[in-house]
Image 1 (cartoon, rainbow, N blue to C red):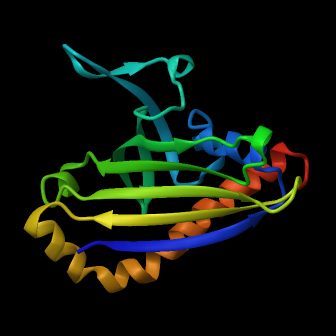
Image 2: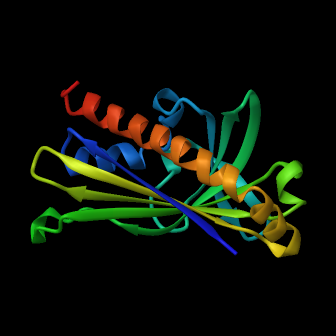
Amino acid sequence: MSLTVKVSCDVNAPMEVLWETLCDVKNRPTFVSRVTKVEFKKRSKNHGLVTIHPEEFVHQEGSLWVVESLFQGKTFRSIDSITSLRKPNTSDNDKTASVQISSQFLDKRFSTRNRAVHIGTFTIEALNEKRCRLHGSLGFLPGGCWGALDLWMRKRQIQKLAPLWMREYLTEFATEAEKRSGKQ
């Protein structure tokens, strides 16, 4: 059993500016209200995940970072990874760009119980040279029997709340992109 939520929002900024905003992981705590901290990581053969300086971070497939977020007054940590990436290509009139991020909670209250993975996909559709539309989908993939049972029991709650969270998230990206393009 899986569950997917989809939301869209129009943005008064060029596709390239919105793309730069989506890729700006380092500054997310300044414009995404739920994000309080970001730590950049890389895989090391001998040491597992090691922390790297933000300047070493490259936004590409396989890139990793740990996000600390606030939700209902509680702090949660998750590890995010780019699983697929399609940059805007203005040279061939491509009208879309997308990034898919896999996220898994690091907190024991989640990770030991169900090992759920959340897949967030953000797609930018150019409407014209100065406007675009940001589409977001959030997929919930449970891990194991307990995770599937937990998802089944909370399905209605997730279907009610997840679109609100996702819309808030997209709106914050849109607002930041509009500020960056000087249109707000």
